[in-house]
Image (cartoon, rainbow over all chains, first blue to last red; front, side, top):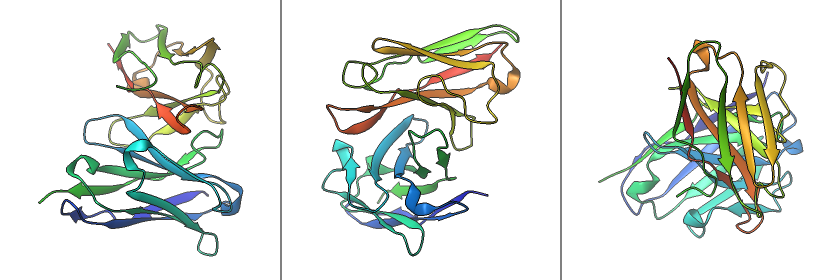
Length: 117
Length: 110
């Protein structure tokens, strides 16, 4: 059974940093692109970044370029999102997604990040 | 302002057909396939359709998709109360080198 378990969400002050982790199981991790998507309270979905199967290619939405970094560790079947210079508008539930545009796309349950003083 | 444009809401009575549109441009829907996602309140989204009209296993055939030019649509035939949810379209955008979402459409079953 496929599982994606996000962790690392927390309350952080503006300007702070946070690293989100997503542990994958139940599938061959190295076969898939992995995506991060967020949803601010009461708002819609926003794609943030993705990384290819071997970690050699990444894409980002403009609003997080230079602040967020996606990475993956095939040995741990995990994908990460390092978030720096956090702003109140980064407050959201952050979802880890296997292959967002694939037919067998699979979403984690999300982890809450709150940026507030 | 989302790159993909969806109506904010749609509604119907049980058994009716509801269609949700998703309008884009030549850099996204016009040249790339569209996925649709369903999000029941309080839960994570799940994929409903991929590659414009393909249904993953387990998705009922009352959900169908189509695309023409720079617009795509999701149709729910035979609306059920359990279809009350938010629906999002998404596609890769070549100009932005990013995945773009519509703002979402809230479907209400009257």
